[in-house]
Amino acid sequence: MENPGKERTVLLQEVGPRDGLQNEPMTLRAEVRAELIDQLAETGLPRIQIGSFVNPVKVPQMAGTDRIWGLINESDQIRYSVLVLNERGLLDAAAAGVGHVEVYVSASETHSMKNSNASVERSTAAAGRMVQRAHEQGLTVTAGVMCAFGCFYEGPVPTERVLEILDRFAEQRPVEFGLADTTGMADPEGVRRMIRILSKRIDLDQMALHLHDTRGMGLANLSAALQMGVRRFDSSVGALGGCPFIPGAKGNVSTERAVEIIESMGFETGVDLDAVLRIRKKLGDLLGKDLPIETVDPERPHRP
Image (tube, rainbow, N blue to C red; front, side, top):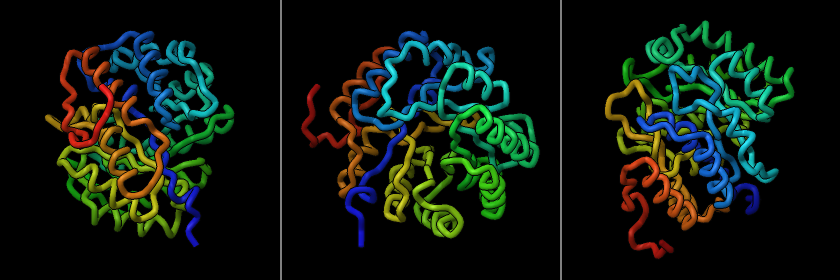
């Protein structure tokens, strides 16, 4: 019999402060990003990715993530996380006091070389050591696979490769497994097929999806995964983000539309959509760009 409480609740992780902002030409000061995170926290979002510990020369938009952690009004009702790409980033996260880190490996050889200058095998081995080190530091971990549903450069990615990476991660016992449609190649049937296969090896309650809208399929893919039993998704306010290696690629699925679609299907997010819409307007003003209102049903009444 269905549990109407747990099974009807969907956990959204807001990745705008990291995945969204890192793809913008403008770099926002740490104080401004911290204020944005605090505003997002007030909307009821249960998870927020506050940034990443990466080389500030290569990704200046993420400079000062350690300062942001000290500036935000931390809530024990929210899981704050950061993305880490190497052991130095992991140790920086631990030193800053962030409790949850996300470690990802690409299943595409071409994307892996562009993203980390390392093969899939080498990256997987290094990531496994990072997960182990994170546990030694008292951190919880999401261990995930990028390009899990295909690659812009290589086309289909062998499912066996995705499974092998996840199996190796499973040996380190992360609290959560992530699947990222990094270059936006997924389609609903492919999402259903992958989840069907993975559900035999991983508890769906441990699975989180990070979907991009490169081909306009992000929300359809979210709906398909939701119907299959996945209850954890990443989203980005204003649909900001995208893959820096794909020219013209659209960003992540928008938090606004994700909330709307999830709740229209009878699930609960606990997120105040009107508050998210107000943040989207402020963020667009900060970035000097229009984040169009048509990403949300124009017939739905909302406060300006």
